[in-house]
Image (tube, rainbow, N blue to C red):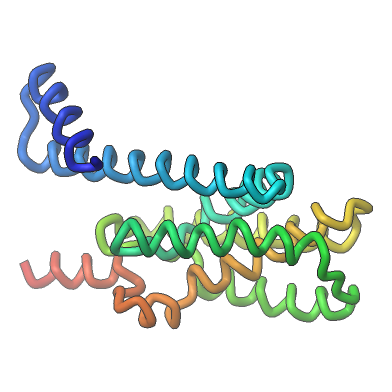
Length: 203
């Protein structure tokens, strides 16, 4: 289904303008990413509806994207792996955030460690989209740490237990998603901008 949809869209795009092969590759990659994102969200949203947890799902998803956008992170090489892992994260973690109440001192210690990990590993790029500009990488790093700090403080002071816990757990989840260890586990290269620079130097 995905190949058919992308093929039709690419055919329509080619008729509208003359693009180079490189430009077409970029466009196709973007369309594939959008297709996977939409279909994945629809599927997980349907599961959340069946489980009666739409509110928890949407709140956790929204908060998670606040830290995901500047720090980036792992992208699975296969769409079914992405679907499975996303389903587990966005259907299980909201339940944990709703029912598991950690003492403030535990949150503070784990949160402080998480902030250090965000500073160390963010932003985590991908092989297809390396963040080659040093200024952009530094900017994303500082934004990631700032957002993580705000989320951590929110998790400690918000009166709403679920939203506060969600602010805490999204940081923990994202620490895993930008960790070099998780990249190695999936057989994917980390710090891809370094490989990009090496390729330019060799050229």
